[in-house]
Amino acid sequence: QVQLVESGGGSVQAGGSLRLSCTSSTLTYSLNCLSWFRQAPGKEREGVAGINIFDEITEYADSVKDRFTISLDIAKRTMYLEMNILKPEDTAMYYCAASFSVCTSAWTGFRDWGQGTQVTVSS
View 1: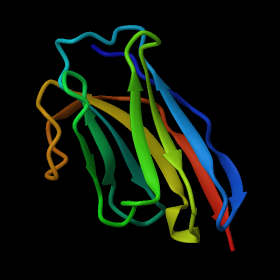
View 2 (view 1 turned 45 degrees about the horizontal axis):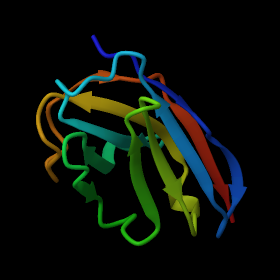
View 3 (view 1 turned 90 degrees about the vertical axis):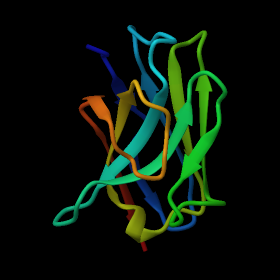
View 4 (view 1 turned 30 degrees about the vertical axis):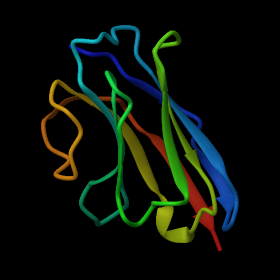
């Protein structure tokens, strides 16, 4: 099982920025994809951004393209999500997840999840 721990959430005004981190003490190249998901109250969980560990090819949801950037520091076993121009609709619990499959826009195949970090954007 892959251990994942998120951090960096908080409260910010619209237009502001936050950087989330996801650290794994068990991150290995046997995994293929690390991703960020989010879930707002009363809504289904949705994929936000993903990155392939081997070639660092990325995938983004349309709602966050050009605002969010996902990156990976293998040496630190940490994935990041830089979130800019935040909007109230970005308010959600953000989770990182790991998959042995490559990242796709289907956002499936994730078996291991972190506990989540809350992001709140006020207008």
